[in-house]
Image (cartoon, rainbow, N blue to C red; front, side, top):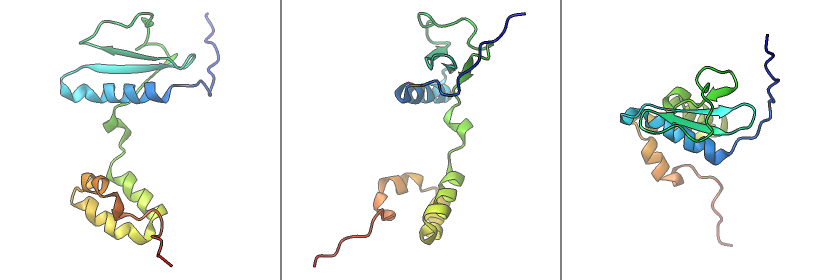
Length: 127
């Protein structure tokens, strides 16, 4: 019986590569069957999809081996309104109701466009 090599918990992964993989996998809603995998051993990111040729050097067992981790899509990460409200409650309790009101209206885009809604520091007053 073949032994599985030990997995390092600290394998470095390129943030740029991981973000690119997240965007690629999240494009599945646009008629693309897309997946991306990260090697537990090397941190390499591999892209697969019905609309592309396999990458040079991409392992054939990406989908079946425990040596690779599938990159989840944005909806699978569930980073929506609940995360924003938990952050607001913990970090901006005095602004919580205001933020909740905006999010209730579906205003994530509005909040992003108006970052001044949440002051990050007190404005300086001329002496």
